[in-house]
Image (cartoon, rainbow, N blue to C red):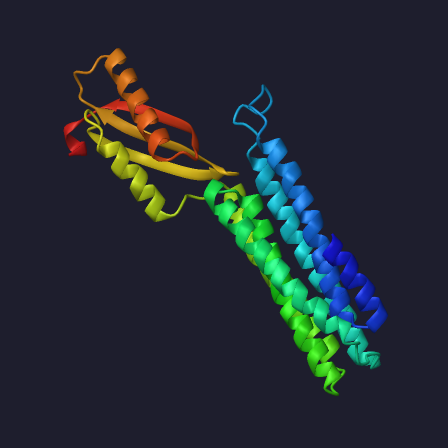
Length: 273
């Protein structure tokens, strides 16, 4: 928020459109982090009667809001830059615009690295979206730096031109995030590597004769797994029940992000071999 305020002051004082667009990006970054905090708070609430699977989707919803917000800001500043070029309403920004861009690059890249590491560690889509928001802000600050630098060399049109570059970065990052989030909201299958690892764990358990209909999808920072296992045909209900519990416990032990497991049991038939 402090970084955004400084950018606004310097952008207005120096008349730099690209620094102002970068300020708006940083402000949206601060706002998105607040959304992430709210999303994480809701996602951590325990299951209730209305939400028996928990509230993990809150993170996905927050990530989608951030993505749409990035696209909206990018389109707005892209339009403003095109308008400035059309009307030739651009001029040379002051030297302070250079310094704030340099500071912004260092700060935002540091924030990206920290947020991305934590987001990967807990597999949080909202934190990862926020991390990429930080990275896109760092990249847009690079564009702002170049715009101001070339404008001060005597090419003032570079200020709105680099604003368009910043706008395109925002739209591209938001667009990519939206499609990734849509997959999650539609319960898309996890990547083949993760699915294969789950398959190996299940088939390695004594008593599991075969595995069919294995499905796994993300639910916020969590994973849900569904599958059908076959057991020896002489197993009684109790033995099958105990084996299903062993399978569930092994999956949860090996994959800590898995919070919901649904196992269907069938007697093993010769044709499965």
